[in-house]
Image: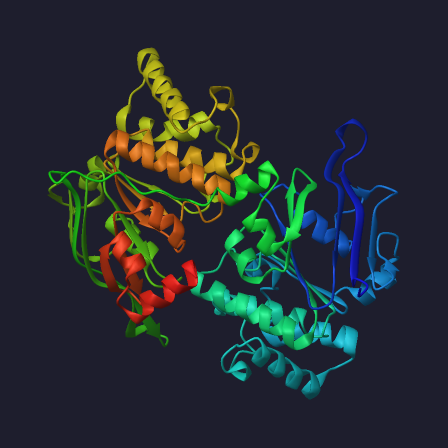
Length: 536
């Protein structure tokens, strides 16, 4: 049998010292052969990324430490006790890493050529025209279109998929033996995700390297991994070939993960359900201006003449890639984005209303954002965040009696979204991602709205938490007959939530219809591509 290129044995990782010490990883063992893909799978906090960072000894020092039994051997070299010089020769050269969020991993002040050339100069000694030629070759290898025109681009000038390709190009610059990919597709659309996974498979085959994949997405694991190690609370609880793991999961945690994918369907709506929102010929055009006088020379048509309606108790799913206009459509429907066209909310035309006249409707239309941590004030407790809307809309003047009513409503909403009342005075940083999203939902629900726009409410969450949030939203919708405009690129979640779906591309509706019909029998070529990427 071929000797593994990487052997991790009895890996322990501790943070802190003394009584405050926490074991982030406990006794983890796994190995990888050349040409093999091993996936570390688990929820946030399970120890996946910490294990991966340990291989390159990139854990924060001195807050992180290993036990004396911990061993990480790469090509007969013990990495745990290696000095800085040895590790510098391995990092980015023999072992490379792709991080989860390319926008924060790439230097915003340097052009793409500079960032790829840096690792070439450090490890291969390539500079000048030779380095430029190698940069173009690498960008071609990872499938970036017209790479010579992208060399002087900054990260913010590229799409998410393009940035991830640049990250992969930089990681492959010195033909590493092992590539560590930490959640490389989490932030990407389903079609771009499929492209990146295909790219990684092709590159692994072409370069003969090993791949360590860190992910919580079981769909990604099925498509690319040969072996799977399931992590929970810092331990590897099950390790098998991919086929065997999905065919016969043995550990309860593995079975829980596999059974966590959002499923089921929304409650059917009544034929007599009231129309909550009607949108006709909605347009959001952003002017393109040039010159000293800022003359308008054209428009970016983010939303270009879209019409739809949503009834009480109904969910309308809006799907499409990044930049298709999904979020802009949701913001425009709530009058949070300037637009043209007709918007009727509970029988009232609101498209022409000034802010003062629009305010009475605001309490009945709410939004839940994609990133719960970014949308919650770090200076306010959970109770203050949830109650803020009540003080703005329902209780403009408060006294002892009103304060009692406000706190009763806050407590009711906290319990309704499945949180503990003992947490009411905690701050956002003291909650998990799933708990923060529940707070966001409670903040929207406290005013008893008729319509909620849900903008990617599950994309930042683990699979099991996604399922819990979907169940919570369906329960609240049925109880209060809420109308949802559900914006997402996760088609499995959309399927579990939506009665109808509209598919957007470049500001236009490409296809619309009943959810199951769109998913199982798409007509437009673009819709077929989306569905194939998500469900195949």
